[in-house]
Structures are given as C-alpha cells and as structure tokens.
Image 1 (cartoon, rainbow, N blue to C red):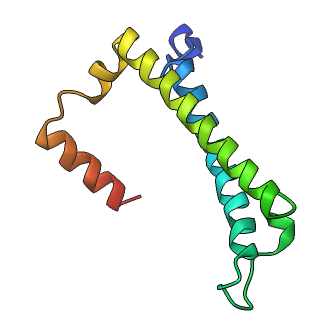
Image 2: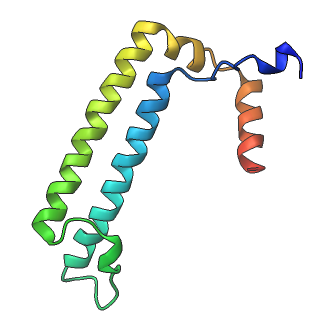
Length: 113
C-alpha cells in the first residue's frame, strides 16, 4: 500500500454536526416509543395497540414525561447545531447557495436510494 492510501480521510461533516445528528436520532427514538405508549393509553383507538415491550414510559404519565423530555432535547440540540453552524460558517458553506442543478442531483439521488 502506498502512503496516500494510509492517509486518514477527512470526514465530510465536523464532529459537532455528527454528534448533533445522533442526538437527534436518539431523541426521535424516544419520542416515537413514548408516543406509542401514549397512543396505547388513548380510549378512542380501539383494540389494536403497540406491544408494551417496544414502548417507553410504563404508564401514560411516564410516557408523557419521556415525550416532553425528548422534545426539549431536540430543542437544545437544535440550538447547539444552529449556534455552531452560524459561528463556524458551516451553514453558509453547506446549505447556501443552492443551485437548481444541485437540487436536481439530490432529488435524483433520493429517488434512486
């Protein structure tokens, strides 16, 4: 192997962006699983419900607490991302200016998975 192949590749996104992405993923998982428990507690949904093993909260009050905690985690995490993005210029470099060709390329890539 050549020395060029041993070079560490620079990640596309900085560490802060990657961490905030995974914190968002965790918060969404908490919101989904606690939301399923809230759904199960509703008297208008009928006989179908999510299995208790994949829900979070234990009871309606606990599920609501988890749900609202995850919302605040999303808000705080969004503020961290926005503050970092504005201070470092990451938002300006990565999100603007958007050109029609770039939008079309991303659209085609999304359709082709």
